[in-house]
Length: 387
Ligand SMILES: Cc1cc2nc3c(=O)[nH]c(=O)nc-3n(C[C@H](O)[C@H](O)[C@H](O)COP(=O)(O)OP(=O)(O)OC[C@H]3O[C@@H](n4cnc5c(N)ncnc54)[C@H](O)[C@@H]3O)c2cc1C
Image 1 (spheres, rainbow, N blue to C red):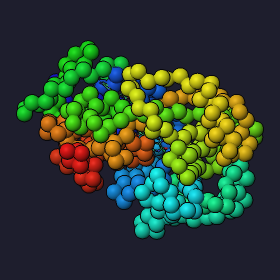
Image 2: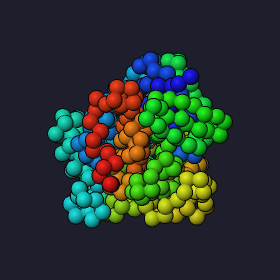
Image 3: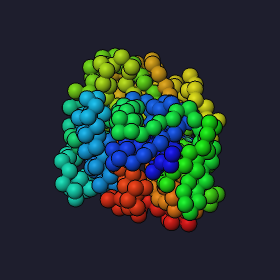
Image 4: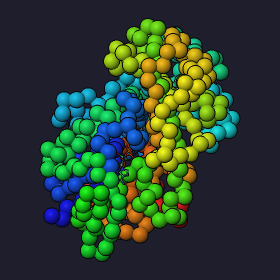
């Protein structure tokens, strides 16, 4: 059998591409080295932030808008909730002299984008944030952007729903089968795995932190993988962090390493309050990365992030998981035809902010593979900018 499309890697992007290609009636095969959703890549840990005014740039707005529409369609089809629109705060210092972000004051930049695109929002003072949420320890040197339609998304749930529906539309899915080689010729593509060979007209490579293996050396260079850690801390009174009271909080500080994400809990607080920061100091290999989180890491995070920014958390860490960011040199996505193979599409849309666009990226990849072009303009994400 010759497939119309083979999708290599079934995380956020690949599961979306499988679903979208299969629902259009294509013969689709999806292959993953693990059994998705799993904890080895970039799409696990219960929640991801989403918002419409994407401070990363205008070119992301059509992707996030379409993604929210698709998530609602998925929910209607499966009955499983993916998107919780609990609202999002983007908190940042008022000073416009943040050295680490070219765009200066992130809360204001985000608000400017919201005005431009007619996205409902508020720009509010620290005192008002504290009044609404006494657990947030915000000083008067900061302020916040609030977007009521933003919220959190269930990453594992989105993968599960899209693979489930993809299969219902006839897609085949092979788990625990690493892809070893992709051989693209003018008349077709052969994908070799640990268990066999499969032929297709087009191949979509959505291999996340492993994508470099499928790229020529000069296009591997702009990609760097960083280990990040997500922590779940016990709350003294979990209801203060419940999704009906506590919105998603993205807190930008004076330095890049100050960033803090705090997520509302959706399960009554059994698993604790999820918190994270970002690090771009130590890069890693996805096959050798340290998966365990040490007691020292937890203690450092509790002291320097959790306790300083939030009231009402204990020092008890209920869980901690490592996760991978695949950063491009300019922090924008890489989505394009393979530089050497017209029949291969590559999508590496992480850089720490890819999930909120994933459903539309999957749809665009399916359109590209089956029709030769996508409805949403992807030219901003081309390989050419690194050539
Ligand atoms: C801690 C953390 C927090 C984040 N927070 C946010 C957020 O709040 N909002 C947001 O929008 N984004 C966020 N992101 C980014 C977002 O989660 C990622 O952009 C997105 O999940 C990446 O999806 P992916 O499909 O590219 O990679 P993955 O989901 O990792 O999928 C890649 C898949 O390819 C498979 N694979 C690789 N090589 C092979 C091979 N040779 N053969 C077969 N299969 C293979 C892997 O097993 C894996 O399943 C966050 C990321 C992390 C790590």
